[in-house]
Length: 578
Ligand SMILES: Cc1cc2nc3c(=O)[nH]c(=O)nc-3n(C[C@H](O)[C@H](O)[C@H](O)COP(=O)(O)OP(=O)(O)OC[C@H]3O[C@@H](n4cnc5c(N)ncnc54)[C@H](O)[C@@H]3O)c2cc1C
Image (tube, rainbow, N blue to C red; front, side, top):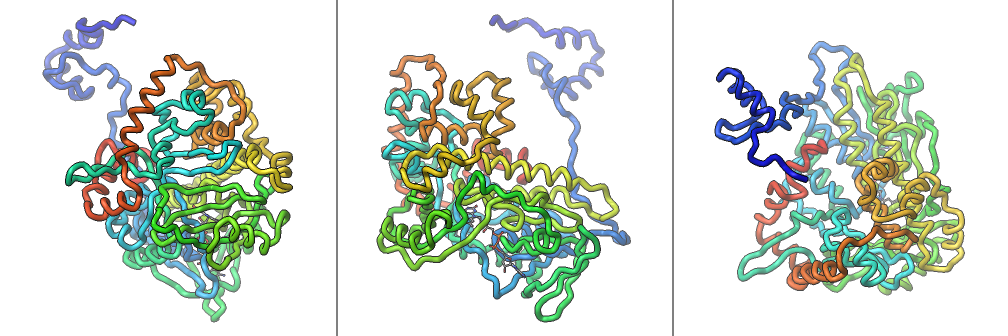
């Protein structure tokens, strides 16, 4: 295409006919510098008006004001909600009610990269303090022992980059490993941190990563932050919920005879779902026809100092097992169907696969969501509203989405207009998309031939993903297909994981497709791969890389504040995380 380089644009020609004052006014409006050769015509359609969304603060004499909020539950959901409400709406009185006799669920340790932005930008949690107290490790993605290939496949968080090449990787070795720099780093068990002379250099700001968190440490740290931010802690067991209408909580009765009353209630009571589920009897939509598991047996095993930079998802006879590295040991959890095996059998299989694993602890869960998250003066966040199952670490991701939605949409007063139906539809759609996303992990996993996997392959309901699967069969990667078709199929893909996340799982499991034509000689792919290997050879193992971050606080500052970082305020702002 021939560009009109050098010739004045129609806009410039026109403005040259204006008076000096008019021309200066146009330059100021469109942002053209006085000595710039051309006016930026594109600015005629830019937004030039600064608009700020103010969170509604009620007037002092408003009789219907929402001032006092109760968060029922002191797990991950409860503390993240309470901290966010106090941080973003400091005029609210926030009380967190938790029962010392009902323990938190104690799982929920693998995350996705949004957590870094959420904790350090949205909640403003100091990164150095966080590393000292919580001792997170890094997750660069998930290593799936899944699908037909003996080595399984990597699902790195730079999956949407195709930086080396998916089709080239498949042609070169049959699988997708080696299609991005991060997948190579994961295979080599390295992190993108380097020793160069006496300096430490980090490329972590270019390759998104998430945290692995020890749940007990994380929740107790959040409890300290909540106290510092003025959240009132109420130790009480809720015995009964007094309603004044179908959708309205009037007050809570505690087992020690107290009557607690607030303007708004956030139900973070975990699977008990004390308010939304028990008191309101909100209908529950089960996902059990797509996701067959309902139990987990957990334990820890030593890792001998080999801190893997990813979560592992390992196919087992009647489900799968997570392996989450923490500084002390690996945290394991075998997720299974109680219809397929007993608890004892699951514990025995876990012990056989991981000799030396600690005493088993059992967790029950149910998959699905309530019809609505928010009814009247109650919103449920965390397991009290919905849960899929632990594959792909969606729990904390969805807690952060719900928290953001609540903070942005809670009215200042019951007299104000409200948008809770839109919040309900938005959150329900996100959960449903996760259900379909996880269902394809099960339906296409050909790794083991056991009764559980035969049943799952035959009967998993994947109907909600079918249109996307049909399009995948006609050509992949989906995200490089015709832009219009791509927008059609994007509506099917789950938030955060997107098309790239979906097709990593499909290609990794070798679900048949026609790969897009490679418009380059194969040697070009190999040259990129060789170049990427030069980084991998020099990258440090995670334990050493973490210690460089510990020694050199500038590395975390670069990650969180450099303009070209995936975790910078510039990235946080458009997604509402500042
Ligand atoms: C097996 C399994 C593995 C998981 N793994 C992950 C993962 O790797 N990553 C991830 O992001 N998510 C994961 N999740 C989801 C994870 O559980 C949640 O993200 C997270 O722990 C939130 O839990 P919660 O705060 O909703 O509930 P809980 O931790 O169960 O907290 C409930 C709170 O409510 C209080 N409570 C309950 N009833 C009452 C009452 N009557 N009166 C007063 N207080 C009450 C309790 O005292 C407690 O404080 C996993 C879930 C399961 C089941």
